[in-house]
Amino acid sequence: MSTTASLETGEQIELRKAARALFAKLAPEGAVRIWDEEGSYPVELYREIAALGWYDIVAEGAVDGSAGLLAALCEEIGRGSSDLVALFNLNLSGIRDLQRWGTPEQQAKYADPVLRGDGRFSIAVSEPDVGSDSASVSTRAEAGEDGWILNGQKTYCEAAGLPGTVMELVAKVGDGGRKRDHLAVFLVPADTPGIEIRRMPALGRNISGIYEVFLHDVTLPRDALLGEVGQGWQILKERLVLERIMISSGFVGSSSAVIDMTVTYANEREQFGRPISSFQGVSLPLAEMHLRLDAARCAVGRSAELFDRGLSCDVESTMAKFLCGQIYAESSALAMQIQGAYGYVRDHTLPMHYSDGIIARVVAGPPSVQLDYVARSMGLRVGS
Image 1: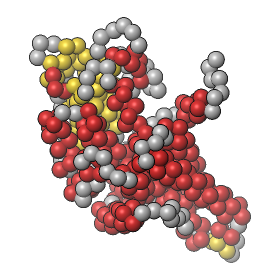
Image 2: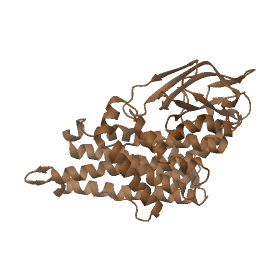
Image 3: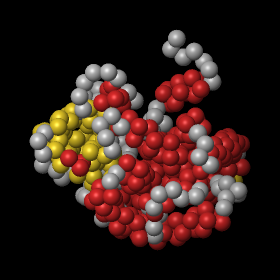
Image 4: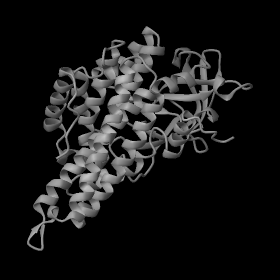
């Protein structure tokens, strides 16, 4: 069976135990499968997460070992679903952004409901013609007499349509000079007049949902601006490293769950008078996947350790995200191949993992962008 890293602190180990107990109670495999099939949000689960104080890891400012704690926690959440990790990450990253860039009044207005388990965060960056090139957003914010007026369209906004959601929305303010110098982040409640939200039919990520957002003369108060105009790029950049660590850890957990269920199946399923796990065509690919998963987990652990020491880990977290996204997609595909028709039917969570594993390569940066960044860090003359 899959194992977790053995060089963890006592606090990390205890947090894992707490997460396993919570998910056994409120998010067993059968419940997660139903949430995914119905596209429903588990309100009680996230209220309990808030009550347990897991958001407090960042809500109270710098916490020693925060990345290591969050990596352990997200791996356990990911064993249930990478989509549940995405929701946790959105909330925690929003709280962290407000802690870093927000005023006390903004923290009370927008972060406190999430800390109580009543609210949630989403982020709105991508547009129909804007993906990895975030600085090229065309959604605009104009200063008015009493605040801001926003117009534009956002796409692929995870969880934006859930009740009580506040979007961290990136918009352009002004023209001229470098594109990134005109970016700003606005705190936008999803039910603000002038906003139309449509759920996009998607192959996966059905618990959180993926949405497109239309803004028609949306009026916001002046205090909807997070930080200052021109700081939007820095806000996005600063949240990305810890976000990669959390998401990567979630993919490690999801991959572990997939490999574990496939090992169990291979040991129980008999053909030609013996378990199919006795055939090297089954056992060796699983052994290799287990080995690669452990390497990916180590990559996440290294990134978390560097982060907690206050050292740069942009490259390391990028490599971890690349490895973990790949291993989730490939382990899910291997599991489907080994389990055959049994894995294809929706009476367990492998179909969910299979569809969520496909997008794992892309979220938080597609492989091509990540490899390009790593190539540049190596000194390769990329694009020259």
